[in-house]
Image 1 (spheres, rainbow, N blue to C red):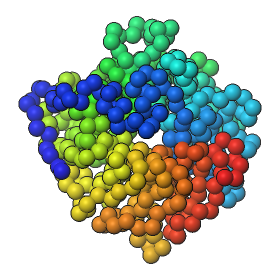
Image 2: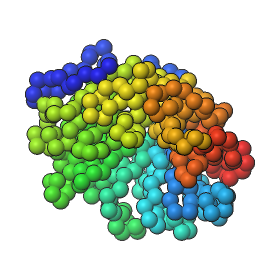
Image 3: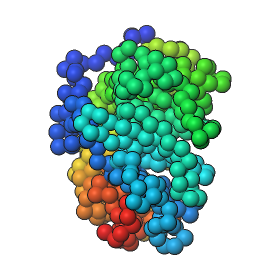
Image 4: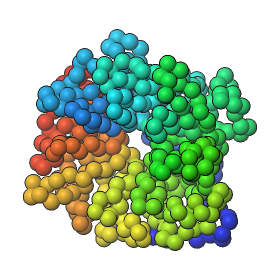
Length: 429
C-alpha cells in the first residue's frame, strides 16, 4: 500500500529494532543464496552471472562470470568476437563480475572481485573497445559488487571495508568506516589516482548514479547519500544530504524529473524530491512535497523502470508492481508475479500486434511477460535457468545473461530463441 513519508522535521525515520542486526535479516531471506548468505557472515564467495549485456555501436559487451569482458558482433548476426576480450584467452581472470560493464566511447569500464575466505581482492579496470587490451587497472583488498559510474574522467564505485594496507589512500580511513564511495581519476591511464573517497558505516553494494554534479547511492546501513562532485554543487566529496531508510539499500537508484526512486530491504520503495532536500542541506531532512513511500511484502533490489509515466519495479519475492511515479499509487489491480527473485531490471518489448509489454527476469527460471496496461500475464521467454542480470532489448531482440553464464538471444515478438552462447568462450550452449 502507498503511504506518505511521515516523520518529525529534522529527525530520521525510526528503524524497527526487530530488523537489527541487519546481517541476520539478510541471512534469513537469502538462506538459499550462497552469495548473500556468505556476505552476511563475512565470508564472501562470489560466483557472478549478474552483469547485464550492454549494446554500444556494433557490439554487445558481456561480463562473464569468471571475470572476462567479451563481446558479440551485431553486424555479423551476433557472432562471438573471439579476437577481442579482456583478459586475453589463457590469461588469469579478475574474478566474477556482478556489476554491468559501462561502455563510454572508446573504453569499457568495469569491476570484478574474488575471495579466498575473508581475503577479497577487487580490480576496477578500463579496456580499449578497439583492441580489447587493458588501459588501466586499480586494485584494493575489498569487494566491489555494484557497477561503476562515470563523471568525465572520474570513475565512481562502492566498496566494503578496506584492508588496512590501503586504508590511508588518499588519507587515513575514518574509524568505524565499513564501506566507501571511491572517486578515481583516470585522466592519466598510466597512474589512476584516488581523488577522494566518502566513508560509510556499512558496505556499498549498489551502483552509484551521477546527475547534475551529484552522485547518489545507498549503503547496507540503510542510508541514502547525495555527495557533491564539485562545481556548483559544492566541494567534491562533501555530503549534500542524506536519507535514512528502514532497511539496507542495494539497488541502483533512478533519477528522473527531479525525483529519486529506490527501494530497500525493509519492503519499502521511496520517491524523494531532490530540490527540497538540497535546499534543506546536510542531515536528515523533513519530507518534501510530492515525496512518498510504497509498502510491499518483499525486499527491493532491482532498478526501477519508467515507461510512459508508469513506474515498474520488482521485489525479491517475485512480485512486480506498476506504480504512479507522482503518488506511488498502484496502477494494476494486483501485481504480476514470477517464480524467483527479481534482481535484474525489466525491459519493455513490442508484441506481434504492435502493442507493448514488459519482460521481467526471474532469478530462478525463465522470463515473465506482462501486459503494460493491466498486468495480465502473457507468454514468456524460456531460459531454462535463472536470470539475475538486467535484460537488454535492442532492435527487436532480447538478450538475457543467465546465472549459468549463457547469453540467450530471443525474438521479442514471438519469443523464439535464436541463439545461445557461453559468455566466456562463445561456444554454443
